[in-house]
Image (cartoon, rainbow, N blue to C red; front, side, top):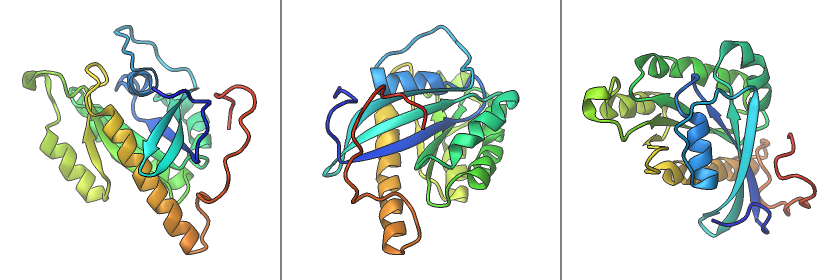
Length: 205
């Protein structure tokens, strides 16, 4: 896995949003460190990691922000929405309430985020046996289609689908950024040279 301090063509800032306990931190660790921890630790506020990812012909530096899912941290989390180029809305396939909350998370992203941000729907814990599921793959795909979003099922524990979800979100974010620039309507400047990389890679945006 390439070091986050390597040269890159573009930097993309993504959020992981969703209810507490759906596995956002596990997805972050799987994507950035290729690791998984069984111990559940609630994220307090915001945590972030970076990783390099080849997106087509571009070398992208992906900065992923793991937001807290609890209501009492909602104000802190939403302050980061407008600074991101994309977000993965995560639910737990074995927890129906987390799936039912997705419409509220989409509203939060649309209300507080940039209009050109890329958003994808992600069902985590896809490795669980069918008997443990409360949300089927078909239901997840149907909701994503209704919302006009790409859909991924992943397993942070097994590592399945995680990189594909981030790659898909990256491709969509770049596409939206290019469209915004072509329309002279804001968006990320994909033609701009990378900013000098000084200090800690996880400095606050």
